[in-house]
Image (cartoon, rainbow, N blue to C red; front, side, top):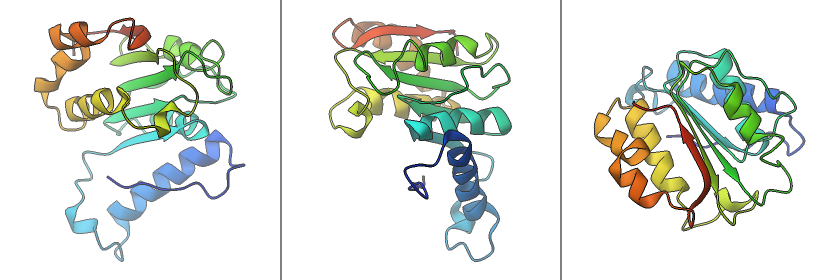
Length: 183
């Protein structure tokens, strides 16, 4: 896993998508990358918060070879992602006043093709900045999503759409949770 910071907070989602992919391409393809020999180029994924979440959706749309995408309280002026084939878990927040779920996260999820493995988790009593907080279900679901699709580890499927998920995903945790299981 690598993390990046945006070039500037004013970068829009298309620029964020380019930056996400440039970072992946650097560690995979650049001969001067000190981690190149330890990176499995067949197991790449993207994640991002806010405009970075919008960038993660664009990166997933433009790079079908990615194994997974995790947009967190995503913001983007484009609301249609009908070409995404990458398994995508979108996390929204019911109290998001920056990237309102009714304008951003929900339409993004609805636009993903039914044939693409997808899920939408709308956090209850959460704000736009909840992904930057500790003690949220984002870690539980984000790790399960990445393990399931990046590592192809089906042992994580029940945490996304099985009995363990059903026991955990109550109204105390999620305002909404949508999925197109099984996967």
